[in-house]
Length: 445
Image (cartoon, rainbow, N blue to C red; front, side):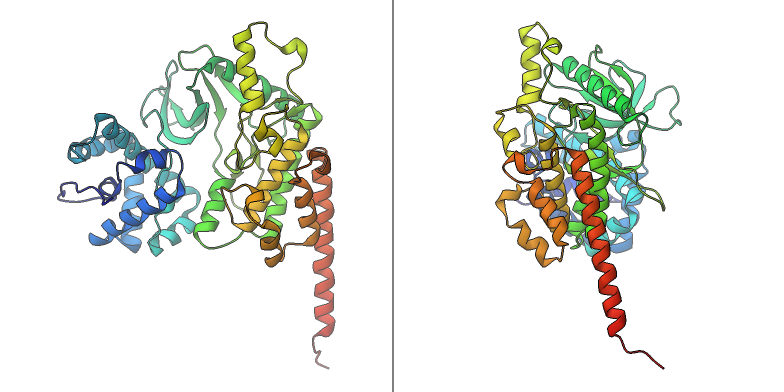
């Protein structure tokens, strides 16, 4: 379908060009994260920008300028664009486009601030995928947090049970932002209470280790239950992998190994304390952005985590309706691309070996560049061998994603130990190759 023809403005901006590029039929696809819809929109959008001479540094300049607009100005601009967008479309589609466009500048600001070199390179190539929003949040920047004295900013993520936003205190708008998680689905109060309980237990077990973000404040009984966390400047592993994919690059094996070991360390603490995450995936791994030093990975969203093998009998609520909610969380909720075969089947309550499977999937995605597919759907071993991934690391990953859970490392602690062995083996091999190369090189007398 051709892009929408909005009436021309005296000074067309990059947000108007995005509005003109959006096809109504793509809104739902974008909201569900469909990569084909994002690529299609990126191309339409770039073509419309090029028609107006918005290319290269000029395009980047407009993106930066619009990213600095306050929420009120973005709302005014979007409100001016909507009346000319598809007069024949239902009102709810026009409203959805308004929400979509209102969130775009906040995404641009975040990407330009946290990954300026990568997104700048892509924009200069004419690839605008880093600037295409892939979600359709329920609230707008500038909306108040229901029942709390906070004002929402950009949306950070939309999940099956909740939505995550940046927010600042309405009474102190210059203060540092926090992260607020709003629970919007059925039985929201129980979901909020469960996440607070599990996160608190894992944080207590971690004894102040930075791998888990503690709950700063929670209000499960609010009209819209919410939980507050501290904010850190970080990109998700998913964002890092997407940027690598769009740039035509692959993550280095040593970098992936470092991320794996950090994830295994965080999970190892939880497993030792008797808890599992159950939703280890790239969008739940935060890699803080700061210069120099070792990045301290954070594993977030413990919303469907819980005790190993499920709740103990004394933990079960006597209310049958409440028990059904926990059944859904602990048995059936998962991300199919990264969940183990047993978790996808819903035929048992997860154990540490299921988290280990998901960590293995993350490593394969990072090293192969194949995102959004289950590992059994492609020959990942051939891809990794072709990219000269060390054989010891390949063996560890093969065991991690084994269909038989008995073949996997028993828990994240065992996985961390095996990864350390693989790293030592790789370093020894590199040193040996270096010595051989040095001895074979001609020397001057």
